[in-house]
Length: 115
Image (cartoon, rainbow, N blue to C red; front, side):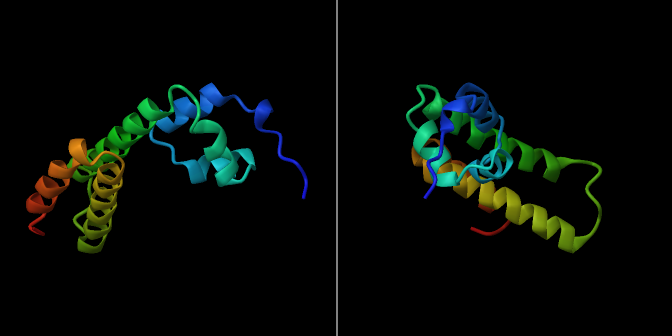
């Protein structure tokens, strides 16, 4: 198996991308490095925990923004798909920080009449 040299990657830029809402799978695809190797490198970065919190905020905010958009087409299937995406973003965030996001997941579910 060939060795993988991740030292050439700009770890700070990858951390910034995570904080902006990019997911590790996307970064792995873009860089050409296996996701598990990127994770092994980035999880030890001093800004990684804060980047993951910001990532959760970004994903939830983007989903919420899309759901509140006046440009949302009046298509039930489209709205249902976007609702699932926002629901997934909330659950993803809650899995990483239950104390911060757990109640927000419940509130989101009630807002969508699913609780």
